[in-house]
Image (cartoon, rainbow, N blue to C red; front, side, top):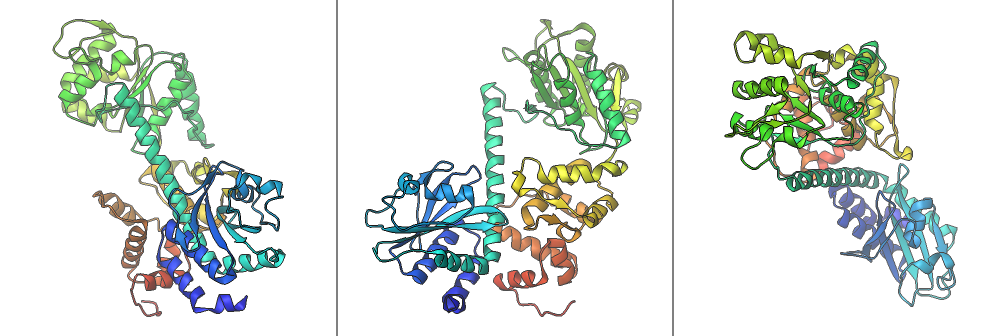
Length: 503
């Protein structure tokens, strides 16, 4: 066994897997190494997916395209993925567990070992023999596990990569579904988005949050307009959805109109319709319309909105025909509307009609008691119970001392990123990014999108972090949530040679 771990081939395998974040390469290299080490008939590697299904990805050192796949729990790969335990059989034709798996007729015995990273199964390694006198045993399992243990760093890196890739797939699927829904409704304008009917999960325990939710529950039972005021990222749209879902209109349409998207002519058409095309208020008849950033509306559109609130009717653009509508209007805006009214940019009569009841949503830094519960919620929301992570007291302290200019949305983004980038179950302060006002401003200023691979993105982020911290490797490693040794290894893989003294 020591010869395998001490060989140049093993060192080359480690270096290659650490330098290349590509699942096809990963599974192919793994299968090739075990094939050379065990010299059996065939070594296959299956990838395990989040839903429990598996698919053949590599065989004897070569990547396999469109390989055999099994649904959750089926096949030997599915069984080992589900149980997270190794399995071997020295008579595959008579083993009932292996009857649901496909393999070559000459195969006599098979050993299957899971590739495990912090409780998550990335895939399964299958070593098959065509020799009648070859019997697999616990010793073979131990050999495979020892090799995988020595490959823990590249295996953990691949787990994070696959997790991020799957999250991107889920996000892309949701976006495509949303676009499909809008297209079916004949509306693709960015000024309007149809809200998800998913249950709103508002989290908090502070006195301020409790008062906000008490008010929201009370106004939900009524049918008058509501104005929600607060900075960006405090959760105004979520509270709007909560009010709708707890109202008598909950089974009817709920549409968000983004008043800060598009020009006034386009937005007026989207809201009130044009020609033979219905607008938002008609489509949402009987339901709720959210006017997000209502203070961005132009004066002409404001006038038509006042008419609707007074008469309960609207007229489409370029039409004088009055169309009755029955919608509840919930508006959101930032603070400072009084100045717009003084400057004549927002109608005072419209403000009073929208402001029958207002809910002021405070900044996150004024809800210190909620930061821990919110952070843990965003960290583990939607995760499998086996994958949940725990914040240490030091991590909570660091989060609580930050002033959160981006409010709840910023906290959500940071916790989701921390979950993906950290391999540990316990999240300590070093796993969190540097939380400074300067860093936040720099991140917001970088708005231009640039296509790059995850490897390139990681490289750029590490180099920028080092530059931001003036080359201090210890602080950079702490900010990135990795060890200093890992940082040096990554820099070496990028071809960057830096002395080991602190700068």
